[in-house]
Image 1 (cartoon, rainbow over the protein chains, first blue to last red):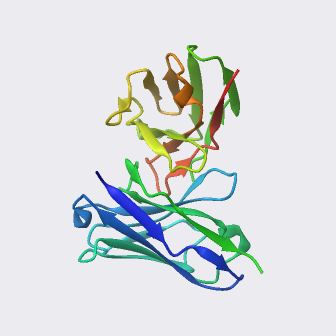
Image 2: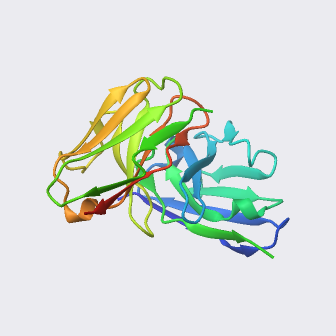
Amino acid sequence: EVQLVESGGGLVQPGGSLRLSCAASEFTFSTYSMTWVRQAPGKGLEWVANIKQDGSQKYYVDSVRGRFTISRDNAENSLYLQMNSLRAEDTAVYFCAKGKSFFDNWGQGTLVTVSS
Amino acid sequence: EIILTQSPDTLSVSPGERATLSCRASQSVSSNLAWYQQKPGQAPRLLIYGASTRATGIPPRFSGSGSGTEFTLTVSSLQSEDFAVYYCQQYDDWPGTFGQGTKVEIK
């Protein structure tokens, strides 16, 4: 069974940085595009960033472009999201999801809270 | 950015009844539309992709239809475990976008 386990969330001050990780198992990680999706408390879902299988192409939603960086380590079966210059509106549960278009596997999410 | 509008925001249904949820796109997304179910504190679960193809393990009481800008998710006979929030998502254009969700609650 596919497993995706996020970590690295927590409380950070506005302007601060955080790095999220997603450990993947039980599938051939290097052959799948991967995506980060977030959900603000009590709100809907928002596509954040996507990375191609070999890491050669990366896509970001406008609201995070220039502040967030998606990366992956296929040798470690891991996905990352480096988040800089965090804002209150970045407060959300961040999910990693397998795929680029629709998502048949999701992690349980990690909560990021941006507050002073 | 393609806007997806779901209706209604909340649907009150009795167990065993049919539920019909709608999703309208601001421009055509062809059949590049998925539906998800989300329960409190859980990640979304893929139900339907390609507008009408059930994902692995999804029971046949869930069905999807539509193309272009109008889509429907139907749950033929609601079970207790089906009360949740449902989201549509388009993947025809970047960035993929989600609807605001429809909450299906017990009547």
